[in-house]
Length: 398
Image 1 (cartoon, rainbow, N blue to C red):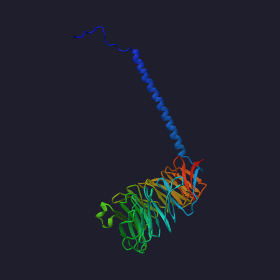
Image 2: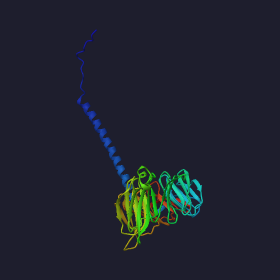
Image 3: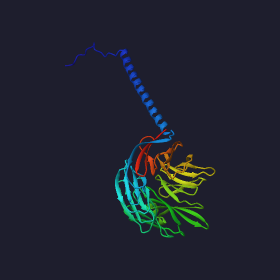
Image 4: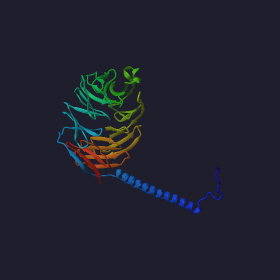
């Protein structure tokens, strides 16, 4: 049966005042959200402003936040590694956490221990001896015994170690895996390549850079050679993919910065090479001053230079492309220079100076303890300072 329509039923439009109520509600919610957003923005600006003010302020004193002592020998050396600290001496290697607590101990006998640190591995070698120990954060990864005395080493992230071995006028450059197996051997000679004085290895272990010195007449020349152990170098003689010569220059130091750049440092200049397969010279920078020390990170290349016509030193920082970032005069004589993040940390005994990558002299003063190692700690203006028997956390104050 068909349903009857009810002619007097119809849709009723909401009154205008109901629309206004809804519109007013939306406006109130929007205004409330805007007020909350303004408060959040103001709080964020206040926090950022306070942080920038504290970060860019100059400090003159330090205070001890905490300290962790350990009765140990005064012949130790230290190096920052991963989330801890490596302590090494003639009796072996110890890995410490950041409370100065021993995580593991590796006894050994070294006459002259030297260390090379990478992001994931480090190696301790007996310079003049025949032993190299390779470590990760978990402990010993492998041992290498060489047949000739060790002069210098380099290490990759995988634990591949290359070493310059002394052999009168025919030194050898041998690359080993972490367990001591020989991967590549290169024979050097004064009449052929020159004498190797510096070497560096890329993080992936694919490229080995070597700096050679040789004489031409009465002058000393430098030769930079890059060896590629991957597919690119297989078709090249001795895996050599790049070879450049520099007259009247002693380039005794070479290192990698990042994945695709390396730097060779001469008497008063440096050269940047770019490329992960067959590196080529990207730029050469003349410093026109004698180099006292060199330091670097994956972002920066730094130098302490002797001032020519006045006392003191100059600290310069360059970026990966060789552009000058900052130049600042320094009055102290610091035997240790580190770059940690965007700060250059210089120290000698208890004297310390910290300069940021923006050129601000953040701190210059007395640490109140003789520092053997120093690097940044979590938190604003806080640092780890390792002395003979204490790991101290300090913070900067006015």
